[in-house]
Length: 127
Image (cartoon, rainbow, N blue to C red; front, side, top):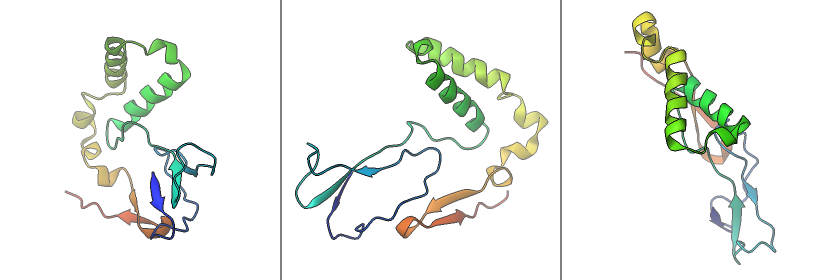
């Protein structure tokens, strides 16, 4: 990410990031990505974001893949592992046995970042 020096993002305060984001850091002046007149940052986010019933399954899959990357080199194996986790976590039957799990507003608080790193709770209406 590049931000114009002296622009609306300068100076950037340290941010308190959620689990799904990696910390962004400015690159050094000697870094090949650095451009004159810009602040360049390194960082990123996980390649998926999940809320609701599948969040636990996604996190379990992600954790297992980080611990044992050698087991996740084949797309078919990845998909079958994800399906197995889904079945063992109650993915297919959870809404029948736990109707409240259908509404994310009853399970979680969602926060969004406003200007200058301030987090604000997002109101989710109950259905």
